[in-house]
Image (cartoon, rainbow, N blue to C red; front, side, top):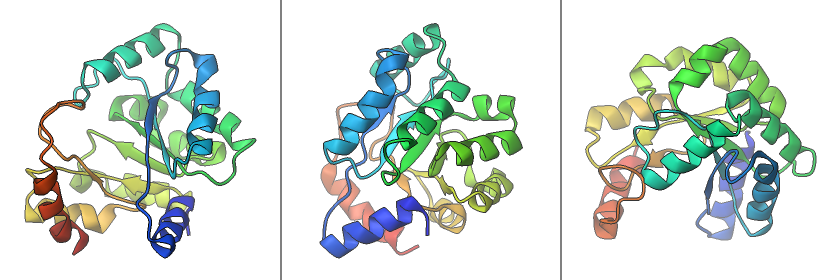
Length: 203
């Protein structure tokens, strides 16, 4: 059982909802990333999503875009993100960490090397925003072989077929994008999200 699965089992046993905050690696500085991760864990984060800086974060709003741009300017990329996770693991062996980013940095590194290095660093899950589930069955299987959960997105526009595809390859949890548009948009319809959840959970 992965750290993510174990954490959600514990949450279910406690009747709690999980808290999964996001932080962009390298922002506001590379030196602050690991202390921020520890602060999030100490403040009650159940899972930490660590954003991998990318030059064209098409699904993210202006705040995350600016954070990614600044982190890249400071020399932070995928290798540095893995180093941050490894440093975090020296003092925290329990809080799950999910890398959240885009396909290009992973493919530049090479999927085999990425999976090996991510597992060695202590990564628990990987969410690649622009990897559709039907095109990365082998990638998901590779992550699983190294004990990591492949995490996928669903959105308000997701079809029944897409939900089935995600259910077949996803692990850990499914990330439901609760609104259409970029991250940070201010028109969340909570009732619509609640109405959608039973169909997703049924998978």
